[in-house]
Image: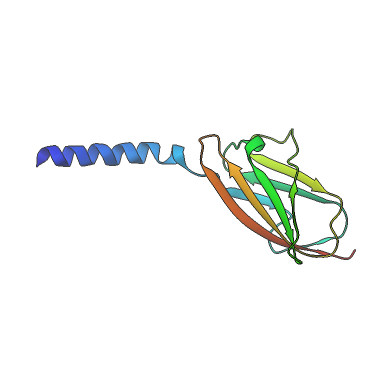
Amino acid sequence: MPTLAVLLAALLTGWLITGPAQAHALLLESQPKAGTTINAGPVDVLLRFNSRIDSLRSRLVLKDGQGGKHRLAVETGADAASLKAHDDHLGPGKYLLHWEVLSVDGHVSRGDLGFSIGTP
């Protein structure tokens, strides 16, 4: 039995040591912020995460209140832990931004962020 206890202790220690390195990217900050109403006009999207992400393999999809959706082009040049995008063609209404990011450790994280666009 002591061998089993030693093996379990070694497995637990290994899991504790490697656990944080295998973590998914967590959303820390967003523009627009979830649940807010922003003025009509061009919309700049910024999502900042707690770890580096692969922006070439990450995506942003914007869904409108009528069921339409389109993919936003991720801008290059953002820092390694952020995604940036821009859209000039959004009218007033409710929107849902679906994001999906690939962290550099190979894990995929996803989420949704709702916001509204009002009239200026």
